[in-house]
Image 1: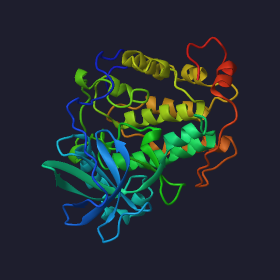
Image 2: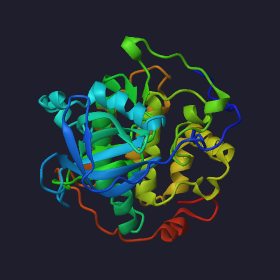
Image 3: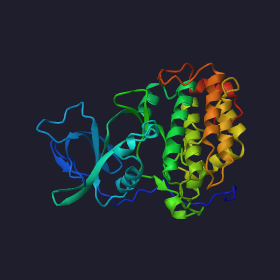
Image 4: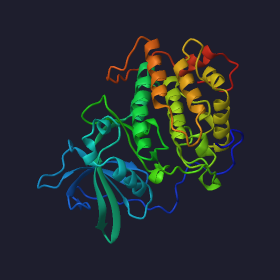
Length: 362
């Protein structure tokens, strides 16, 4: 385990090589053939991710792809890296034949349907076909006034524990958990999926875990407000890092703002703030919540994650029990229904409640 003191300085916000090419937009009706010789027809573009475009899609036929298409295709220039990284994960953990076991169906991982290379105008493009999704949780978070209810936060935390355990069992870590990477199912708004595996890392290839090693060139990889202390220090992603990121997400969803969000342009400040948070979790929670609404279960969750060594397997069941105890404390249970309502009270009200002595209140 690395020392828990000061982190190595350096870096900026994640890796994003400036020379990556942007994908050109394909016209509706373009047909792509995957490595299994299956043809997919593109519909309208519905989003953009990184350096690629996302299209509605369906199995190839004489009919145009409608607005109710069940699939999406992600397309990037073939020499870009993120989609290639995603594909490696999907091909190992999310193939359709893996959908029969109940464990996969409940994993919260998107289902992978195919991939391949496509030539267009003298350029090669890499593409991947996955299930279509509904809206992302960042949009829901904004619609709810940048706060989720305590019940909803704990439900989402429990879902993500299942998803992360599944990913970790398949030798990968995600490294970029956040609301914009959590998508509701297109057909069932009570199901949530973790998407975007561009930063996914195979921490345990062939059962051999990677050693802890800091690389200044990798400092601050990920999304700056949520990324783990390991990532800030330039270490490769880990299971404990995924759970640390989930902890930050749950705190933000519940209180509205993390203490370091006012200086995201300064990764050293953000890193050091997280180190202080980890050293004194109780003080961090007092900064984020008033005494009346401080969620003890989130403090216990973060304390449990804090104890993990870099290569240690997380106690998923213990963490689930902590969040389930939080639901019980508010006379609630995970009934399988995700309710997105505007929560009474504002962030500024909570700042007043927590007292004026805190450095940066949530």
